[in-house]
Amino acid sequence: MADQYIGRFAPSPTGPLHMGSLVSALGSWADARHHGGRWLVRIEDIDPERESPEAITQILASLEAHHLFADEDITFQRNNSDHYDAALAQLRQQQKLYACTCTRKSLRALNQSYYPGICRDRQHPEADRALRVVVDDQALCFTDLLRGTLKENVTTTVGDFIVRRRGPFYAYQLAVVVDDARQNITHVVRGSDLLDNTARQIVLQQRLHYSTPAYLHLPLALGDDGSKLSKQTGALPLDNTLALQNLQAAWRLLGQQNPATLPTCCGGFLDHCRRSWNREFIPCPPNSA
Ligand code: GLU
Ligand code: ZN
Image (cartoon, rainbow, N blue to C red; front, side, top):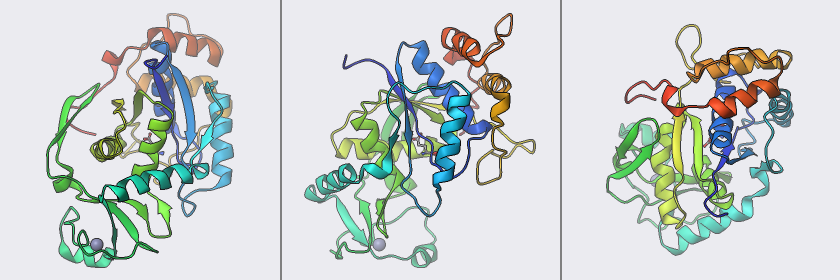
């Protein structure tokens, strides 16, 4: 069925899962399951400098311990270079791709929050350079299922952005868009820290003639000091022996209601999650990520 809901959880293996990642995993799982959809897991391992095979093992063990099982074999972005290259070729053919020789330092000296297209017409050779995609100067509207309509002109927020880094490494924006399209993802449910990537991803979808999925950005689990919990800020890895308690905590952070009698196993609790998931309960700070 072409229109069936297909969701996904797409962690980068920079470390083990923490409560913030569990909120995204559970939220995307519950939204998919509640709508009778499928749920996929994709490991976004395209940045060898920040990632480790050990983290992949830990993430997969954690998902399993929490009974969050994907409907298809788990996919790995490191296997998808051919598809990313094909997308780059498409952009190149449209003359919407160019090599950029600007250094971080030279860009910093410009003191501008967006890349002002310096290398756009310079025809630098591509080898060993970052590649940017040309962004049109126009406002783009998209819908977040919690926040409603959002508007962004990517020219003034980021400008022509990098789709392949020097190295060469594929950029997150490119890989995520290519894989969401290849896997026919209809709903992207993920953390609010990724909200400000969405407009860029839609720019790429339009360039590559892909359809745009529905987006829902979940609240972030905050640390005791109110800062964002992330692997970088040292959020504690999930203790897999406390899987049921972890799921309950993530469920609460998603604003959802507990069952009258608490199930004694993850499977039972997830059954409740599937049935009772309600987007309207998700806490959503107005206009913030
Ligand atoms: N791999 C990204 C991350 O772990 C998430 C990608 C996405 O959900 O779009 O931050
Ligand atoms: Zn440049």
